[in-house]
Amino acid sequence: MVDESTSDKRRQAETIFAEAQQAYANGRLAWAVEYAREALRVDGSYTEARHWLAERYLEAGATDRASRQYQIILRADRDDQKAWAALEAIDPEGAARVRRLHEIPPDPFVRRRRAHATAEFDALEGGAGAQIVDEEAVSFLREPSPEDFIPLDEVISSQEMPEVGGIFPEHRARSSEVFESFDELGDEEVAAADKAAIWEFDEDREYCQQWQRIEEVEAVAAAIEGVWATEVMQQVVAACKLAGDDHPQLVAAGTRAAQNLAADPPQLYLIAEEHMQPLIVQGRPAVLAVPEGVSQVLSPTELTFIVGRCLGPILSGYLSLLQAVDVLLQRPVNSVRQLRLNWREAMAKVTAGTGPERESPAWQHLRAVGHAWQQRVELSADRAGLLACGDIEASCDAIARGTAASVAEAADRTAERLMARYEGHNAVQLAAISVDEDPTISAEYAVYRIEMLRW
Image 1 (spheres, rainbow, N blue to C red):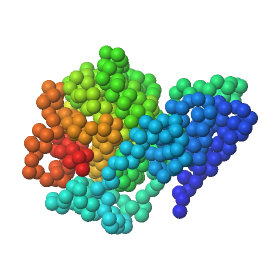
Image 2 (cartoon, one colour):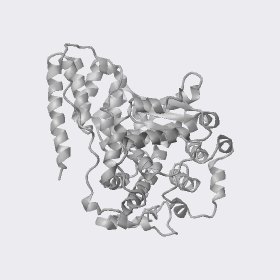
Image 3 (cartoon, rainbow, N blue to C red):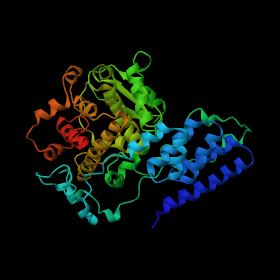
Image 4 (tube, rainbow, N blue to C red):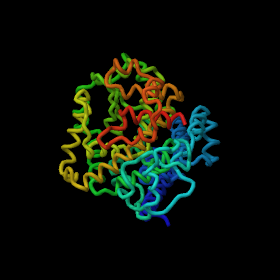
């Protein structure tokens, strides 16, 4: 049965797309493209409209924009032969990148026999002897227990994209045929993330839906997304400097990662802090703040991995929900990560009063579910990073270096040395870190991440 909200979105998109076709029939290409983009903002899975938009881009000579649309189509549907033929003709390198995306291995967490209701999450109490690459093996988490999850029969559909306002009222007020849409890509690409990205593990969205079902989460995520690209975010990065010609390797890594993931390059800022963890400031437009030591210690390929794994949650469309984990779980943050603390403080102000009372059963439940989902997101983000850089060893070394407490420590850390430190330990048990530990920087969880990525 088709979800009613999905049907409503498609009907709304079809109405807007009809206006696009009418504008095109009247020779108004600029308006036609804007209407098509609006339709895709409403329903990013509307493939017919995306094909049509790509064709209009080609008609206007914007081959790069057309290529981007075909790549989005093929990321969701590898069997769309029309899109393959068009992309091969206009951008063979782009077609090759999408083919590489489809070569990524399947989700090892998915069991051959899928149960119903709470039995779906029996894997969360995995045995200590589970083998990482065995599809019959239990999942990697021992926290939370199955009681923390709502039966899958009751799981709601994915988060709705925010509804778009009226149809270009400012364009109706003037008769402009300037094709401004070629200057910069709009957010119709973000709407395409209703479907799981290729680098995501199959069950990530199920865990995400469990997180969304918690009453406070939607409100916090909406508040976070509401301040993206506002003065609040500008104040957060005020102490940073924009990466430019003085950091060519970092800028090149951002460009390469975005290109290989069919995305726009992020805005890159530099933080004068002594640690190895970049901060995803916001998702639209994508803004990353990178510690200066990261660009000094990591190789160009490792930098590309880091940027790629940051782009993963943005392109998957659930960054604000992931940022809500940081806000609501209130994990301890080392004072050396001052920008992260400033970001969290700013988010706490805009989300004040929306979380459950600390130490209450509801708070404990919220933390367990958010932690479980983030652990899976970290694994999928690693896969996005690998697809961005194309080098498994560099990716694993970057994961290991990211667990270092300082730049000096990171310079001497590799995946091989980190794995040697935990030799003889069961990776599944190492993965069961406490809710107070951030899986992004946990050395124990990094061992599991490396094992998963190599698999």
